Length: 228
Image (cartoon, rainbow, N blue to C red; front, side):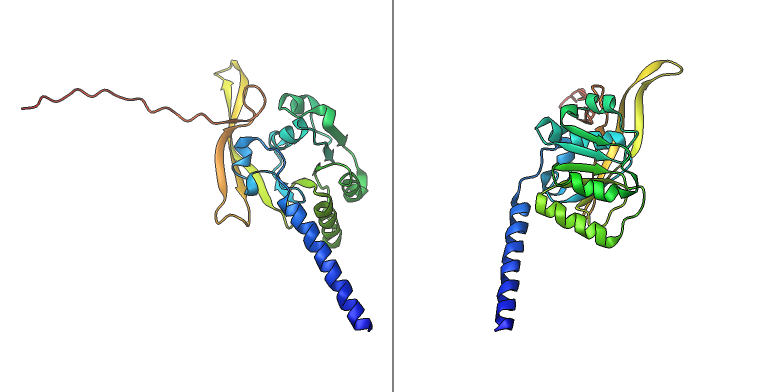
């Protein structure tokens, strides 16, 4: 009798987990700038997933901009150098932003707490967390449908996003003002056979993201050869 009840309970829990996972996997991705969405698995930031991102603050601003503009509250934990003015220029809606610059040694608990109420959380871990604690946080994120952006390495991520080969424009030989930065954004994911990369402006002259303009190949009119 007891074994039958236990089996029924296991089946009930499996059905409940399948329902929860199915609901989260079917949830549409959060709004993401098209330049970044084209590189990400699923075409955007997937609710319930974590992403490992490089240390570029411009990249973080670019990932937070669209969700905040469309009404999603975003939290930033453990980044005392987060520049609100630069984030605002990059398109982040500061009225939907919560900053916790110095969470202290309980940074993981703070991250888990705000993940209960905010749909997007970015964190820079000061130390390596225990695997058990990371697993509990991942389970809470999946249940709540939270997107976690981690500056630095993180296990079991949906994708790793980083920038390379950055080149600023606008400065001449002792004159000028920095206007934009061209770089390569690369996304690596277990869902791709090979990484995806794109050249873009981050930031563009207006502070946001822009796809790098493709050079136009000039059309040369060749002289017509006389027909003999």
